[in-house]
Structure formats: structure tokens, C-alpha cells
Image 1 (cartoon, helix red, strand yellow):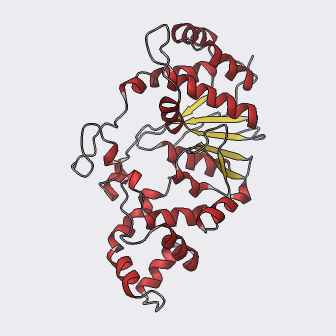
Image 2 (cartoon, helix red, strand yellow):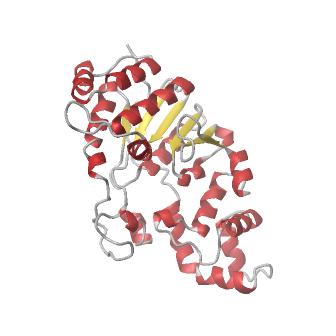
Length: 317
């Protein structure tokens, strides 16, 4: 990509519009369709743009919310998010994500709104937005500072001070008062030094919100201590296999019992770095891409103020 100067914002789009749907009071537009997720997402983009003044921006998309390669590795992956079924009761990989009706009708409007503004929306079949983000970070790190906007801790693994990659973590304070996650944050919060160590810790610890069991009896603090002590999950496993006397008793037994899980967990936890994103132009446009579409969306759904704010924040003509 030419002209990589300024700052790149990578939006974990579904994370943001889910937050908007649950956090912004429901407003029904002239069309009769609720617009709180659309309005909230546009307002978030405006707030981010006003603060960061990005030169490049990508709305990263979940073309597949539960990729087959992750389900094959750990079948319980995200089963709790499956519509109309209890977690752990399913054996098929072709499942629908549970999305509230009031949100589902807004997603096509979000797609149109991004297109009207001319903002890149990037998804890859068979991959989650996390994988798109991981790939775009890998392609563009070192060329300009990168902010990953998400409410998902999984993306902490991409933090990289040397290449100016940080996470703007919205889970607690939203986009107006986020946690800015860099290596100092990871060290203070978890006692681990960097993004790769976070991924190793997360695999060892597991994550019930994603259906990852972790190693039974190994909590976050213990996982962090083990990864810090040995340097990586791979080195920890080598120490287990070689009979390191420092690993003994119940802890050794737990780690040995979790061997099959640890064989596959990294494939699920680690984001893909080489998804086929294609040649995408992430530059923030200089003008609204489709004024007629933007006008129609604004009128039909009562979004004039939100669009105006984004146009102003991104300095579009």
C-alpha cells in the first residue's frame, strides 16, 4: 500500500456494534427499523476519528464467526453463542450465531453506511474479524502506528510496542474512555511482557466466553507465572516432557492431563496472520463515496446527525 503515513484504525466491527446495540437506547427510525446499533457505531467511528485523526481505517468483518478450523480443533468453540441450543449439545459445524432480531435487521444498514462513506470493510471467508485484524497488522506494522479497537481480550496478543501496535480496549469505558493496552499494561495487569506471551497464557488459562476449557486447575495467575518463568508455552511443554523437577505434584499432573488440549489450543487462540485479504485500500477517503446512498439512509433511518458527525470527524467533502 502506498502512502502509509499517519495512523491505521482497525475496527473489530461486530464487537462495536454489539456494544452499541446493548448500550444505546433503542430508537426507531422513520423506516420503522431500530437504529441504535447503526447510530452507536457511527458515533463511535466519529469519536475515534476526532481523537486519532486516522489516515487509514478498516472495518474488519466476521465472514465466519465460528471457523471450521477452530471447531475442528476444539468442538466446544463458541457453542454457547449458537442460536436455539445449549452449549456442549451440538456436533455440527454449520450453526447460526444467536443475534437479537433487533440487531440483525441493522447489520445490512451498517454495511450500506460504511459503503456510502467509502470506508473499507474487510472480511475473509472462513475467518473471523480477529484473523483479518491479525493479517492487516502483520502486513502494515512498522509502516505506521496501529490502533485495534475492540472489546475482546483475545486481540491483546497483537500488542507490539516496537511496531507501535496497541489495543484500544472498549469493554469497560467504551471508545470515549478506553483502556490503552500496550506492553506496560500487559505487564501491570497480567504480569506478562508482550502480546505473544498473552496468547500463550490465554491458551493455558482457557476462556469460558469462547468455550475454551483451558487446563483444569490452572487459573490466570498461575498461567501467567508459568509462561513468564519458561518464556513460552512451547518451552513450558518441553520442560514438562523433559521432567523438569520444578514442575511437580498436582501442577505437573494437571499439565500432563491437559496435554491433548494444549496440542490444539494455540490453533484456536492465535489469530491468523496470513488470511487472504486481497489488495484493499485502507486510506480514509477524501470525499463521501456515495452521497445519494448516504442521503437515503439518513432520511429513511433518521441518521442525519450521525452521518454529519462522521463526515466532519473524517473531514470528508
